[in-house]
Picture (tube, rainbow, N blue to C red):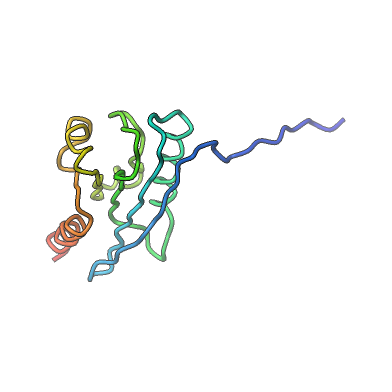
Length: 140
């Protein structure tokens, strides 16, 4: 008698979307940028799991190297995250890689009490420059 198996889906029912980019420093360090967008006023469990999975997947992909720093762009995400939202990839936090969260001017006051202030940023180009300076200082 065969054992029964039940098919399952790994897709999450969410309306959130994401885009990813890479920036390479002059020393070859990869800085990943992942931008989330969605117009839902509140996030449910599936939305939070989508944020977590996409951030984790991005952090462990080799392009041919793994990313050394991450910028998480929340400027186009209407809903606000709570402090315990699991959006930071475990690999990057364990390896003390720099992580920044890009927020809009309207979100700045809220997120300054949610995330570590040193992790917040609001300008992509300035954040990339800061990360490049970090790698220059650390490795030269």
